[in-house]
Image (tube, rainbow, N blue to C red; front, side, top):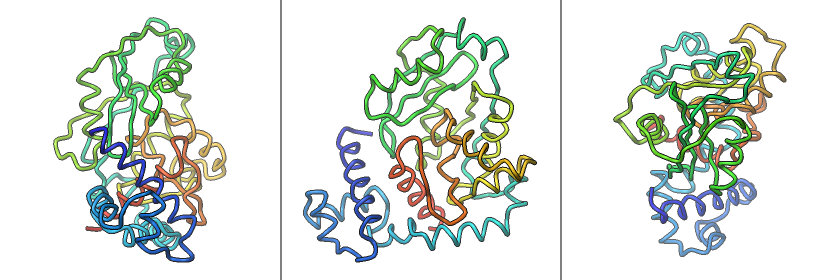
Amino acid sequence: MTIQQEVDFQRIAKAIHFLQENFRTQPTLGQIASHVYMSEAHFQRMFTSWAGTSPKKFLQYISLNHAKSLLKENNIAETTFQLGLSSSSRLHELFINIEGMTPAEYKNEGANLLISYYYYETLFGPIIIASTSKGICHIAYEEDKESAFETLHKRFPNAKYIQQKDVMHENALKALNPQDNDIGQVKLHLKGTEFQLKVWEALLKIPMGNLSTYGSIASQIGNPKASRAVGTAIGSNPIAYLIPCHRVIQNSGIFGGYRWDPIRKTAIIGWESLHTAI
């Protein structure tokens, strides 16, 4: 992704926010373009290039009614999702293997771990990817590189760090680009409790372009009364996009929060819904 593409995404995010705030008045293309300081023609081209459709049609895929319809469809197909048989899930085509850190690695907060990290651009904004010798341990959307590293360092304060690209990053980066067809295996090496790991594994079963709820995830892991705890575990997800916590929304159909910005969550949901519907 180029610097210009990053600027375009920021404009798209601003446009999505404007659409969400003003959808009742059905703003015109001119009003949306004016909000992001662009001409109608330029904005239309930029948005269509990124989303593959017009702003008006994209709005349909981030609407409350569309979210509710997806949740109803998921209830019908829930057994299929649990078995991991959905052909529409990119994450089922891609083999993602989660390995929890050992008790010693967890307790020692990364002591004896060498973590390679680097900053990359993706379709949904800038990202930091970090890995140990065993797999990817951290992926986060971050606009500021210094803040991105600080967040990583807080997670593993006793680890040693080296800023460099590696093969694990490259494989993960391909999976982070929904348009990339050349995707290999990605191994994750995660710091989490047994409950958190169980929740994160359940998230991998939500196909691209579909949505689930906190209650549904709680039921899938055999603890239907643990919706709140599931929400906390999802909020602690250390792997942006690949562990698709963005596909979990409220029972009402409202998208809700996202640790890497609710507008980004909306953009991802809309993009995935649109491109799996095509």
